[in-house]
Image 1 (cartoon, rainbow over the protein chains, first blue to last red):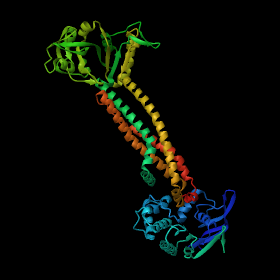
Image 2 (image 1 turned 60 degrees about the vertical axis):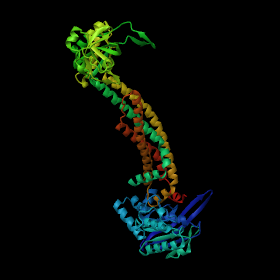
Image 3 (image 1 turned 180 degrees about the horizontal axis):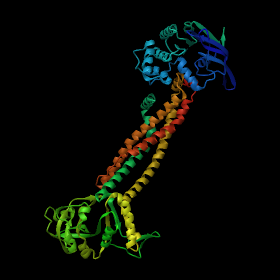
Image 4 (image 1 turned 90 degrees about the vertical axis):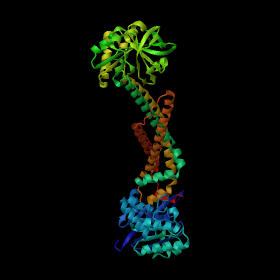
Length: 225
Length: 406
């Protein structure tokens, strides 16, 4: 905790039952992430990437082990407490963008603040600021379907930032974009990291991982050296 | 909360046909309640205004026991006969408190002739106070006066319709008309008046004394109209009259004493039965509508599994999701309720128009605020009741699973 660690995973295990057999998705994994890190998590499919991502993102809890997020133990939390943690501490950027199609861009970005119970005026201002930050301050009233893929991902990034989370988790953020747009998104993420954001990018793309200042590679639920 | 309502409305707009079909049950349920209750209220207010025309709730109607009565499922002649006479009328005025006036009613169907013209009419024997108490005035000439009554004169006051039939536009006053080949001098013509669709213009009025002597051949009356001093006294006067007849007649308990209030109670009774029947229909419709809502909400939850996953990922708690889907269900059913109210109002007006058309007089439909409130509350409760299960199902979705849903 002393040297700027915001995430400390210790001996995390997670096992799924698939039919008769058990799959050890994570097998005693330990990892620490420091404030301001830009960490890339790589590995072939089935290596436990998604499971690690879900646990880091507090979407799921481990079977055993310890997860300290800014000093708070999250492994024992119930679903609503996890929702609150996700809302406050974690920003998600998905491969599929995952915006709500019927809402305007601004409303999409506001949503995490709405769940946090922020007052209307504050919500609106914070959402505008976040959109400004990703270079979309001029498209607030559009519907996501009216935007290009790159713009949608920028909206998603704005939504991830709006609550000033401890960490932004990006799952294949360029996976659905052409290489030029993907490059722009990566530039934006690197820029945000330079401003002090802690970023974790899950990817199988070496080029994307190349932007990171630290890469961990997973195999069979363990970190390879 | 406002967000949820907006979301719900946009969800409705996105699936217009589906929404309308789903809401049919609610629309029919709410519509039938509002429609029938509006009609009932219309009927009630119609009865009230008609009753007001003949003295309103101050009026108590007394008639002698019917000669025939129902015994063991067949109509049987009573072994005794009781009659009303003028003596009853005068004694009521003397003995019963809070009675303002008593109008004896005695009448028969007669043919009245003038020259070659003749018409069917209803002949009433009256006393001089009749016109004032019944609020029915002469437009030409004068009414039956005290001397007419005391001397049993052969004078007649014509209803406007009878005057029209016999004289057309010619002067009627001073002419002699023939009733049962007796000659009566026309001294007045009454104004136009209709009660319960019955045209009083078909009546002719002669002194009661004359009628009893020359037409009926007896001293019996068809009925008494007893007017209380105040409508609040109607109930107690009604009771007093019951005691009065028991005191003065052997079979006094068999006299029919009906106040306007009991007439209104009868109408209310009919309306209540109607309401219950329609309540049943509405209940079934709302049940069907509710199941429809549950169905569409379950479909909606499945369709929007990914949306639920996203919302949970960015921090929605169970209750947020629950509230969102519950709000949608309630907004959905309230929309159905609103359409149902329009539909029901239209239905009420439509049916009233049809009745009015056949009854040949306006029959009002009155939208009841109470019915609208009840219908809306039931639509609301239906939405809540049938929305809880799908909403709960949505709120319990696992975020990881939901996000993976295609």
